[in-house]
Image (cartoon, rainbow, N blue to C red; front, top):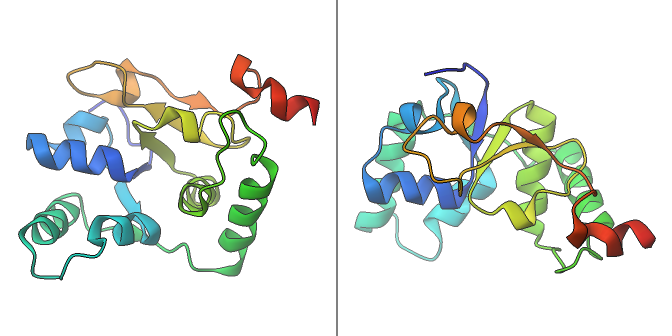
Length: 162
């Protein structure tokens, strides 16, 4: 493991780790892993609590240390709304309230968001993230690197002009 940077594991990365039976600490490259309340809700979905997939999710969450970052406080909600409003004009549009809350909790908790969903996060100012789409066998933080959200990508021109 190359880093002790605290990380927030996005839903798609959590499922990637679960389905491939990877060691989450080695794959991400951090000893401090967490999910948020929103990610926990996405992992539960409409399935009953005793469904095998839900049980597998909770077992992996426990294996990762069981940290669930609260995203129900007023400050996170306000930042999430602000993110959703500011970036609604992004091309393609991204106004998913769940993604906005995930970005907000990563920013406010000082965690690096580990995601395979680069397009929904790369433009969020103040967000640090690692793009887990980069084909690496492990240690995302070291091999993919930490990026900072910004509006300099060509797809962000529409937002900058508004």
